[in-house]
Length: 102
Image 1 (tube, rainbow, N blue to C red):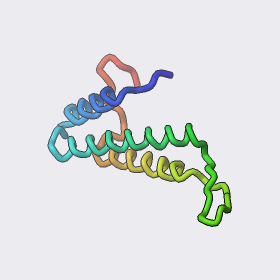
Image 2 (image 1 turned 30 degrees about the vertical axis):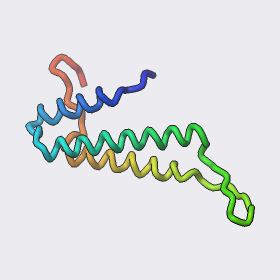
Image 3 (image 1 turned 90 degrees about the horizontal axis):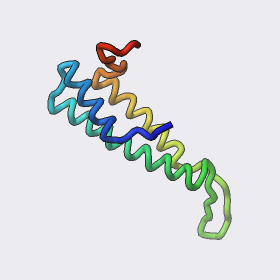
Image 4 (image 1 turned 120 degrees about the vertical axis):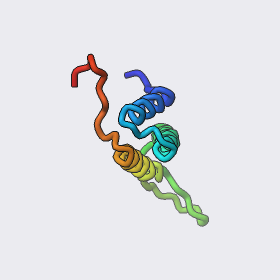
């Protein structure tokens, strides 16, 4: 599966805002916030891919234990916030092209 480019996502968001009559500074700012969250989500994904779901921690006394990688919860939070921004922009459903079937 090909990776979707940030520029393509932003273009899609802006096109949908324009098509729905919401191309205003407020909604453009929400779209920018969405894009920032998307970059943050990708950083969490990268950390999880690199370090795994579980990570080892060591305290100041040298005791080591395994815990859930904090990026897992942060990733989930970012995804939830991204979904909330899409709802706030009124873009919960994709806008199909005229010749595109749903």
